[in-house]
Picture 1 (cartoon, rainbow, N blue to C red):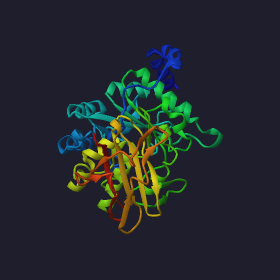
Picture 2: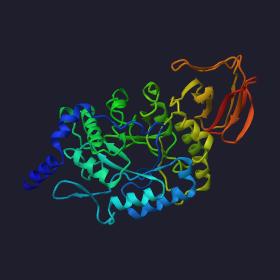
Picture 3: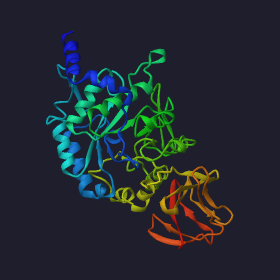
Length: 413
């Protein structure tokens, strides 16, 4: 009981009255995540097997490999970094895994021209059973600001069930307000798994929101885990249908962290990366960057594909034409350009053909249309790094199984 009183007294001393009075006018931080965040997260490859040495090695590798210069700036520590709360209720790092503490680690990451992120949960515990933020939102936000944190992934485990479950809009808005009150601009990632349609309310709360359950490193599968399941690349891609209207600068649909580098086939890794770029999705690497295969590094640092993802318009791409095996995707870009991708979902190589005159490229929902029947565009292959012609003639070629081709269309003149 004494600990409860101490915690309450500490929060009061921090300005509880002012926080309550300012609650109605609190907001998320503006001017961050104007393009989809790019970085790395520990969970997909390491799970709970993390420590400060791994994070330092990863930060060094990101800085030295060219990933930082390509735009990957966030080094995000996922679940299991937590220790216990101190006698005043402030969260501490696990003293064995992170003996130097998070502040020292944040300084290390910042010194390398990078930013650092942490993970917490809207419930009493995290998904890994560590202390969650419920009941400690303002304390945790203040602690993150003290440590120099730049990004918060906020999960949804241990939040109750049925009538006893927390209201997600209120829970996430509470942490948004706490972060704002702490005063340090922090990217706020809503990891609610899409169960309560966060795309309908997330724009005023966070900078990105998960649209699905967890991703897993397979092309086309769903893996059960009791009362929940993980999905492969194609099922998650399909779940993005109908969501593009909700995304834009400062508020992004998040189909989860990438499995690029964890998939068995090089083409699958390439297709995964390109399609996340076409979705204007956050590009958060989820693999071992210290020992990264040079071919995976080449995929992740492709300037043309990254430019599609980071385009200032922030318009999410969509399939303009489909067959059972092939999907033709388009994404409007700044300056009247367009990205155009052909995805082969099948297990065999397929030939593609797109007649620009018969099928003009357009996005009626956003008012960006390419009159390819009358206006000529130069077509550049972004994976091979060369022009392949213009829209005066049909685009033809072959795309291997579980792979993709992607082009940038630029108006002549």
